[in-house]
Length: 43
Image (cartoon, rainbow, N blue to C red; front, side, top):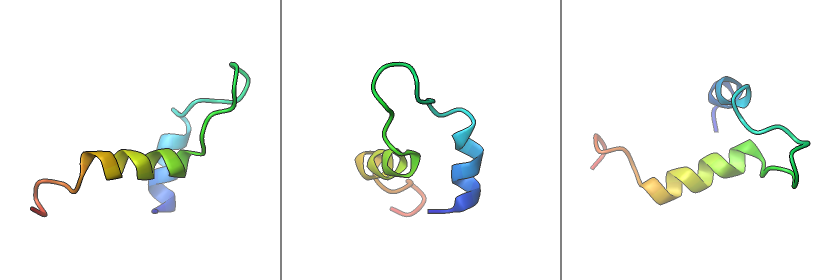
């Protein structure tokens, strides 16, 4: 996954300290992209 995309989102992503630890950002993005499917331009 592109490091630039991760760096852009990372500042908005959940931080540790509010209960259980969050999933790693790259894992969450991969799950999101698998659930939403490819962009409509590719179809």
